[in-house]
Length: 359
Image 1 (cartoon, rainbow, N blue to C red):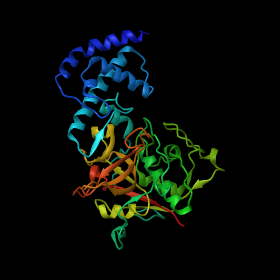
Image 2 (image 1 turned 90 degrees about the vertical axis):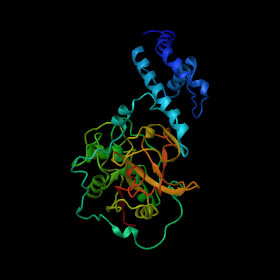
Image 3 (image 1 turned 45 degrees about the vertical axis):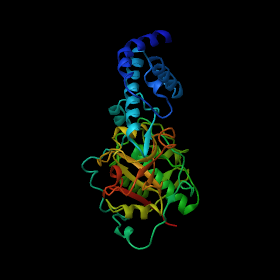
Image 4 (image 1 turned 90 degrees about the horizontal axis):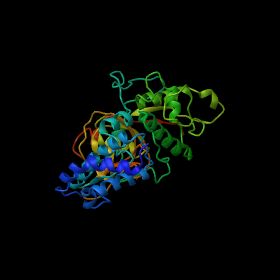
């Protein structure tokens, strides 16, 4: 394998022309000066320091050069966005060497088939489509279930499209804590391996089907008893047969495209929600109230764990993601509400649901 100095020389040759063009532009980025983005040496140093920070190792010089070019393109996008956006900002994270297509293919996992797009209208023993969520009573001005002890630490789905399982588990962990007082981290892997009638493991799934599975199968094991391995495996419930499980009685769907219904439900417990996370800014979101470009074609399962206001009309919903604690605001994102769009920011109000549990 070539030495680090040889790698650097090759990188210098590749970016010499691009650096000349970049020098004419006025770059700036959160955490770095404009000089860092117009200097050939500093661009390389920035890439090398990013590699070290995120423990990135490439198998060949060619791969390193390729990833550097992708890194640089992402860096320029981050910079351009931060010049325009006023309420949120982007930053370099562990995904900075991935093209956006690579990122979407690896980290988005709500990929419903045409059958899955029709949410279950009736499941024996379960209640769905509860329009009463909008009836009666006011709601608090702000709610944060993290402060109430109903949200476990941010988890990381890795390169497995299992976001639906993480969304489901976050909601079940929440209602279990509210009812029992115990915050217990539960097993996403059990859902990936065992809930296969309608859901598809690392190839996507739907939270309602997962709630139905948990209610009908007798409960979900603890994460420590059935740990996550970031890939599909054989259902091994028997190995944890004697371990404690967390049960639910069913689930409810929040009326679609209704912000007040969602907030009322969210005032009572964390929710599973689906969003369109395919926009490039999601890949590098670093902080603030997100109000950037996104569609409403749902492709990612997350959990709503609160709502509040940042002033100046920046009302938001607090969303727990499953891309690890280094992404966003320690693994969370605040998504703007009161947008005037019935479906909400990135389709946030289109498909929300939550588990029920007897007290």
